[in-house]
Image (cartoon, rainbow, N blue to C red; front, side, top):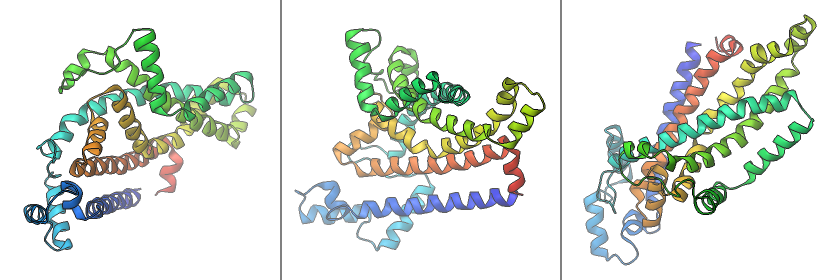
Length: 317
């Protein structure tokens, strides 16, 4: 098992290294080079030359990449060209709000999705299964921005129960002080999580219900409730946990749309604003952050599998 963990850790470090290479290459693939992409098409040759000298873009590519890697190791992601602030400071300011939103709606979505998936599997091909399957497909097929728009129209305009946008103060405390402004963004995000993970849980539960250990337990007279709760549920979690680690980019992608729709001051809204303003250091900083989060999430999912499923621990020895 130690060898497996070491191999997974080395692989994670390698993936993060490749991500740094990719973000560095993306910056240099801008039309006309980084200076032209950042300063715009109206920039003069003198302005471009001065910018390249100030930012080190006139150095050889390997020198630029080494300097970029050293800055990353020191937490320096560059400076925002529109906000005149370090990208790391902007991310540190916005990240807690995004984590608050995504963690809440992901937990709520999973808490709803897991029992719903099991309930569908136990009642396979019955009316309840067909109804929930139809609802989950509808939610899965509905774009997050469209669902967010429907929620705003219904619960902020037709029924003015909740505000259409979140608190705009930069502190996390201001967001927590106005919980009503979090309701609609959380509902929009949780709906997408429920639609995805209820299907995963249903499929995983059906696979486990067809296993030999379930037939053996039934032959011994074990109650169906005990079989589901003591055996099938735990074994079904393995695939769901693994999917959760790889679902992190989708969660952040949904947060980008949700934060833009509800004007929620998190990483997603920062990315959206940077894309409109062509603030490339911020864009690449967010991309790098999400990539690292994905690698860490998949690594944590592998570790969780080792504790959830004894078969995995045996196989990795």
